[in-house]
Length: 151
Image (cartoon, one colour):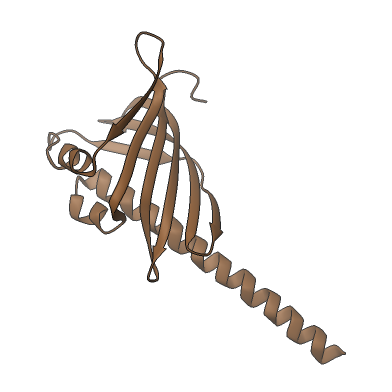
């Protein structure tokens, strides 16, 4: 009976360790994505995103109407590659909420965005990742953006 209990405990521990390892891999994919964003390096970002990534932003426009804007992968990468080299971008992630089921991961990351060390806006990112042959790739990213009610 003791041996069976030990085997069961080891099995449960191995499952928990495997899940933690996958969560770390997902988190590293997102951290690498933002490393590329901060450096303005689209090659780094390219290692983290799927070829068919969908990018969207939602919020309230200046007229007070809700909006949903879709951006192509090329427009996104060109915007990063062509930004003024003097301009510094930093997105501070406040937390990670990661859920994984097999080859699908969902990540929720509230953030604050700074341009040239000055606060610009805040919101939340929602990432959907796909495990492509052992490598996590971002397939969908939607974020909210607002300038008020950030704390």
